[in-house]
Length: 103
Image 1 (cartoon, rainbow, N blue to C red):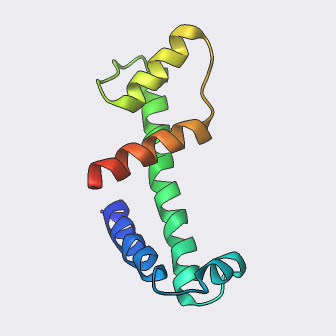
Image 2 (cartoon, one colour; image 1 turned 90 degrees about the vertical axis):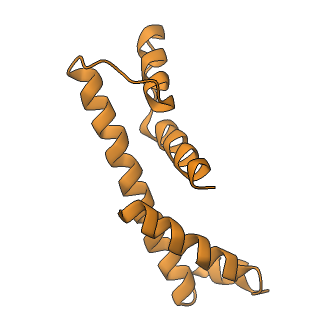
């Protein structure tokens, strides 16, 4: 799966930052192949989590019953209180759940 591969590679690259005293500068200016690859992987992770959000939103719009997962609970609550959640908020939820599940 794309998400799992991207996550594993990103975890390895971020761990490599620990021994690089200049990583903050490199990250800021996107210097080096590691920082460029991390940026690519972030895009992959964002795209994958966006696909999950969009699929769940479509399910809600189609009237499907939401499951017991956290994303469904957030969407259900926002629907009940009449305050829609922005995709960025849901993206954070999805990323946190997926990353926590990997640890």
